[in-house]
Length: 468
Image (cartoon, rainbow, N blue to C red):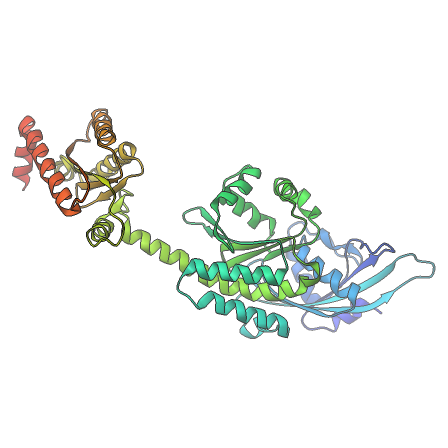
């Protein structure tokens, strides 16, 4: 068959590939045998692309192990295949057709051929993503139900991961959430969140979890997935990752990028899958990754909205809304009342003077500096910005000695600055106390401290009174 003549008759982008099957069942590298004019435009746009000739190695142009896997499977089994993938920023619809094999006289190996018809669009096509076998369509529908039947994100994810693991027939399965804005990752398995395992994997790769996610994205080489029943391709592409996989007895790997509006939001990760299910895995995870992307993106958005509703953006401590919610919980006994509670009111002296005389930018910097000192002194305790210059710190289960030490540390820290001065009021409570009463006591002591401060610095009080 004259493959070039055949390709030239195809109006869509068409190409023909060949490889050899050796007596031991192994394959040679793939060779590009023919391209029509529509497809050749892709080759000529590649940087430093060599001039095409029939039989040129495929990897002279591309490094797409997923395409190679499809091509090998199509031509070696004689079965036509279809794929719909998100790669290189486009949606690629590909049809693979086996062509007649050739064997020369006395030739120990068999040469087989695969035709590839390609169509791409910048936006997803609904009819393309629904072209699936009955088994894959059923699996996609089942996972979609798991994803949307509950408002509990973690429950939806664990049930979805359980189903994906069944489809893959894999030993391990997880979803990695990637927040590129916050540069954070979460690792979720069928049993819930496992940050310890994520830290372990990243540590073996000598990077942070977020850096690991970026390296995975780079390993995809603009494709949507890696489906590897042979990890040797990673030895050269990412030796640290390969070493980590080998160390953890991972022999085969599925890594599917999860994107929303072409932006990475996560990965589907599955190890030691059933090789006989390879095509079912791809057929299923292509649309699942699309649906999963919307769910993860929505979760990340809700998390950010909740963060913004509970955190003061300027000082990065909790805001008044968060404080009120916490106090309501303690008052209504929605949560157990801590046996001991330290309460600290810290009012930033002189903020109005700075705002009026220097400007609000300087006032914002002073507030940020003050909150930094509070975080240094009170560590992981609950720090709230209750108002413009007023902070409240709740210290559950603290001892009176530790509360005193933390307050003294704050005084030491502010003494090392030229501009941060707090009026402080503290209270220590235990037993059957009332949180609102405890806060009132600390507030009153803070105002007494403020009066003492202005008595020592009358010029600052006059300045405030004149401005007011």
